[in-house]
Length: 361
Picture (cartoon, helix red, strand yellow):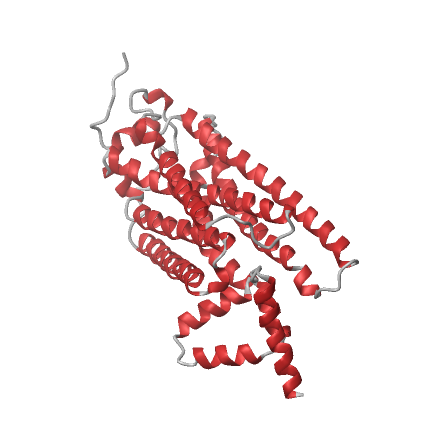
């Protein structure tokens, strides 16, 4: 019967697996790393909080797609918490950790990754439902969206807790990995392959949806007289989502490949030399996402900018925008991928701009 080592500290497992914890990682080098890490995490907290607040504040964003986008920002915010915890529990400190504290450190990272991944998958389903009906937004009710968001976090927490629940090597030291000294190599293979397969499926789905939208848009453009920007709205939304997915895949794939190689017990791959750089690349994904939101969506950027500036001119700006004809109002809603699906209300908004335009001429 194998002996279990639940009461050991992490130095025991690091020594058993010959894992490098960088004992010399102290002094100025540690200070520089902590400063950069603190800056990135601070940016993650602020920027993703602004995205969530923008979705709550701006009624143009009260649709399933943007609720899920806000939840993706919440996943990035959670990732910031995981990285802060990691910063103060890594390097030479790693060897002093208890087993439970180390499980918590890695579980937070795994939960944040799963939350982002499953959220992107749900957004893919939402986009598929909408695009196949040639609508900007799906007909998901708020209750269903809430259920989906709760389910996303339930799955993420469960996946982050799987090693703690028993899929580890505490009772079989020979099965321990090098990068994660108390994770079983079989679990690393399962974890990395599962995520890489989901990456591939989502990329294929989004490419198919994008091609469908482009084809339908070209067909409809020759039979309808609507504004060009209006017809391009689904394409703009898909470009935003595909940019998010592309950044996610680029930032996380190298780290998952490294974990896969470690799970396969590749002793000559030099994974110890690159693991920190790939972890930093994964951190950058949570930094990039809010930048993508604001860059790709003028309405989102405008809402975030007003919240940052706390300008006293918000009301006057809103009054000015209400007097601007449809070239601004309608394009604003198109850029954000967000318009009122009630034709009467939409006609009232754009019609008012036309009347004002005539009155001013």
